[in-house]
Image 1 (cartoon, rainbow, N blue to C red):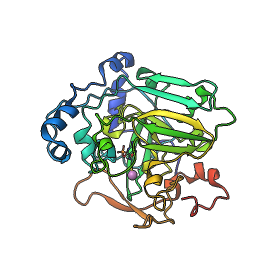
Image 2 (cartoon, rainbow, N blue to C red):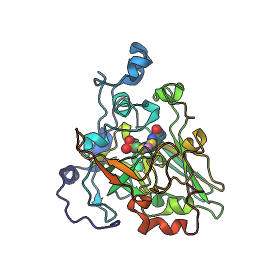
Image 3 (cartoon, rainbow, N blue to C red):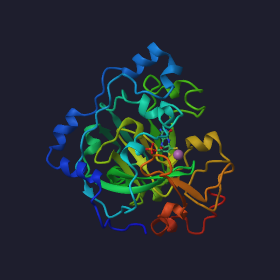
Image 4 (cartoon, helix red, strand yellow):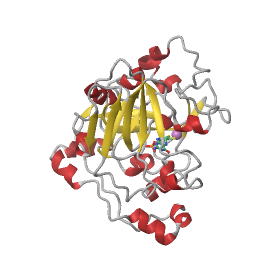
Length: 337
Ligand SMILES: Nc1nc2c(c(=O)[nH]1)N[C@H]1C(S)=C(S)[C@@H](COP(=O)(O)O)O[C@H]1N2
Ligand SMILES: [Mo]
C-alpha cells in the first residue's frame, strides 16, 4: 500500500546516494551543470533540425554532467521494483526536445541549467527568487514514486527533492491564493520544439501546468531536483521539476522557472491542446478512459528489453488514494477528469 516505509533498501541505485555522503554538496554544486559550449545550437545549425531530431546515435557533443546528491530516505516511498535508471532517463516525454521517447536524451545534453532563476510570485506575502544553488537549499529527501503517463505506461522512479509545500510556505500564500500555476522555461534557442510547430508537436509553449492550492500543499506533491541519487539530467526536467504521483505524468511539469499563486484555475498546456482528452485534474483513474484508449491497465517499464515489461491494472489515484482521495470528496471525477 501507499505511504509504506521501505523495508529493503538494498537497491543498487542507493549506493549512489550513500556514496554521496562522502562529498561536500556545495563543492559538487559548483562543479555541476555543465555543459559544453552550445552543442545544441551548433548541431542544429550544422545538421539541420530534421537530422538533429532523428534519434539514434548519441550526438557528438558533450554529455550533461550530473552530480551526486545527499538525501534522507522518505517514508513516502513504494517498495515496488524500481525502473532501471537507463529507462527512466532514456524514455521520456519532453516535447521541447522532440516527440520521440529517445529524443529528449539525445537532444538535451547541452541544456544550460546554471544560472537558473525560479520565481514564486502572485498572491504571496513574500515573493521568492531562487537561483540555481537555492534550489538545493532545503533538506533533500528521496521519494520512490510510481509515475503513470496518460499514454498507459508507467515507471517507479526514485526522485530527490522536497515537498512543494516547503517553498510555498516560505512564500506565504495570501487568502486570495486558490490555485498554483507553473511554467517551464521558454527558450526556443535551447529547446527547438518551442520554435517549430512540427518539432514541438503543435502544443503551445511555454508548457504550463496548474494545481489547486490544497493539491499543491499536499505532502506527496514534490519538487524534484534529482533522480537516482544525482542531479536531474535535462531530459527529466533539470534543474527542477514537479512530481505529482497520483496524477497523469503530464501534470509533472519540467524545468520550471515560474510558480505563481493565483485566484482562478489556471490554463494548462494539454487541456488547451485537447480539452476533451486532457482535463485540469488529470487524476489517474482506471474507470475513466481516454477517448482514444483504455486507462484500465498500464505497461510497467522496469528494466526494459523484450518481454520484460508487465501489463498491470491501473490503480485509482495511481495507488495513492488513501492519502489523496479526501481532496476530491463529493466531486464527480468523470466531469472533473
Ligand atoms: N515542460 C514539459 N514538462 C513535461 C512534459 C513536456 O513535454 N514538457 N511531458 C510530461 C509528460 S507527458 C510526462 S509522462 C512526464 C515524463 O517525465 P519523465 O520523462 O521524467 O519520466 O513529464 C511531463 N512534463
Ligand atoms: Mo505523459
